[in-house]
Image (cartoon, rainbow, N blue to C red; front, side, top):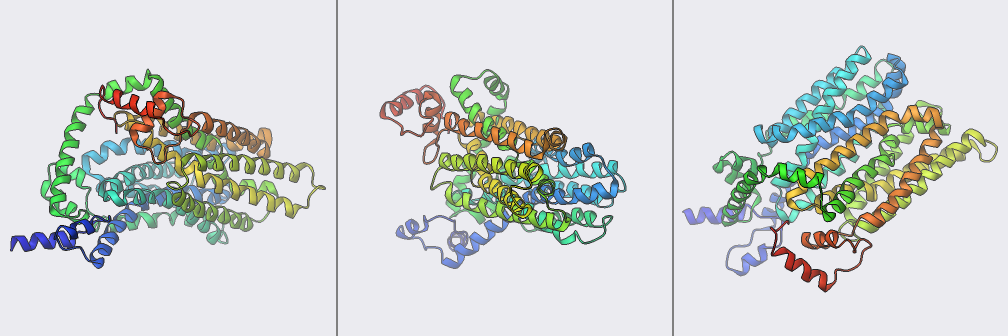
Length: 526
């Protein structure tokens, strides 16, 4: 009976990789197609439910771009208050992300997502019924903390719950959901713009509660992370979860052993955190190149103005000549749709074309679109006779859509991929966190200064500035970012150590021999 149950266990819990054929050759019954599909649906459902936190972040970014038009009219806020309201989310969500790591270690991945949803719901409810700017800011800050909690832990949960063969695809879902959330925010703006100015922005913000409600229901369906359960020594529960995502009971035992070994390594690594930060603050030439690439790309991702484009797209289109609020919001829907479509294109191409070619296309395309946008806005303001108003508006909309499309096909998703690839294991968490801090702070500064600077040098002037920065980012990609597609972590490390493969050459034999010799003297970093 026990043998039959073990066989049933193996048959019931099929994995998402092709190793089933090998098992069949060894005499074990091959899992049926229906069993594999059931497994895929279960893991996919877990990943989708966890990714709903990313929709909260995207929705907040998208909906605020339109809601701010009516908040300004209803609450009579100043331009400075508008910038603070819009831009504070980046900084506050970073605080939530940084505190979310310790929280998830204390109460679990699953319930940290629940806590994030509850905090966000409280913030969204306060914003919905806010009678003044002060109360609105309190709600905004709470919502930002909730988003930070959820967005940080979603990727961790998905990585820990996914089988190795499907992990790459499933961990890309949060990035897709952020863009989907932005699109839904734009659609919400357009759908409720016809209501009175006292009601419409409240409904726009209140609708954001719905994804967090779905997250609450999902928590009764999805399991806890097996890694966290093992860290808490709840081995039977961890084994039950692993049976749902593993090929066989033998593999479950192997994964339990691996998690136990990783947990022991983590304990010893914690004692070395101070040494890691000392290495980051006083880096070797190789680590310095890694920091230039990893932290630099996160900062260029933001200082080229993508958040200003997304948050203030109605302001941009108004400056281009669109007068009606509904037409403004309809144009932003086109922006959100474009952004969502091209992130899907990027995910399809990133492992086929490579990181660096997509970054070239992205940065060069963004530079061209930002220059075109600046020219279009300038002509609309100062050379009305040269082009018709309609052509100027169409050109501006085309340039904004082109900018977000080129961003989504390269700079947006590849930023996170590179951050996870280029740093060795001992530095990866802290170095990635350092880059994220720089990126979030840059995002907040751009969002909170855009309107003030635009008043001084004009909206067109701001996009000429972003275009110049984007031009610099092309040079940054050329000199500081190596191609990592198809390379092992050791090969990537060797490129940074040698400092001579930045422009996409193949790894030479003597470099490989040097790597083999140096690897004997150091701990494996992969």
